[in-house]
Image (cartoon, rainbow, N blue to C red; front, side):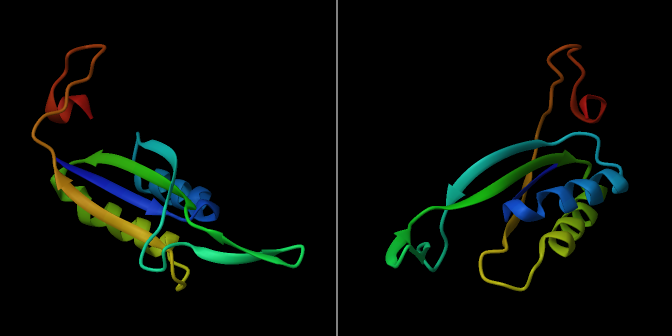
Length: 112
């Protein structure tokens, strides 16, 4: 099993969700997060005054999938969330040793 974690722009969230559901992803965890990358945020002008935005709002998606589906899920997220501009986000994949469904005690693939 793999944990696919993606951090994307908030306005791309619905498109990514729909694409993942079409693929057959049945569950995910979604969080509103803030952060910055190489640019250390950005500056904006409001009523003539320039100010720095240090933390940019993002959406973090976490999905546990079978090993065979991990590359497909990554591809779907990248293709759907991509705008071609700085700050599109990141996707990373981590191995998962064990998953346990709390309600039933099911383990690993049965818990997905």
